[in-house]
Image 1 (tube, rainbow, N blue to C red):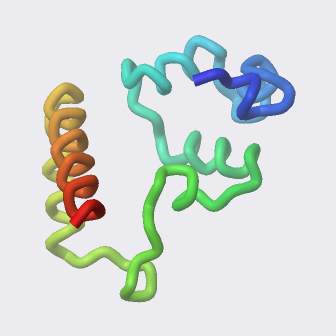
Image 2: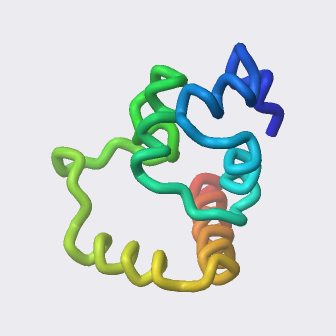
Length: 102
């Protein structure tokens, strides 16, 4: 990802705005470091977008709330190793692509 294209003032300015180092930004990007909700909120504010848009959540049909089952699944996934999380996300992406084609 080229941060200069995303943030008009570049990586250094984005890092300053959110209160993190440039190294942290790259670690977040590469999945080497978990990003806190506070940092996600600061990045969303820096880009002037809703957090949901930043993380790619589609609008929920039930007033923006996840079902209890979806929350349980999300917690289980978050507790897994990063490698396992990426694997599950890839599977979900493949399923989503297949359903979009049908």
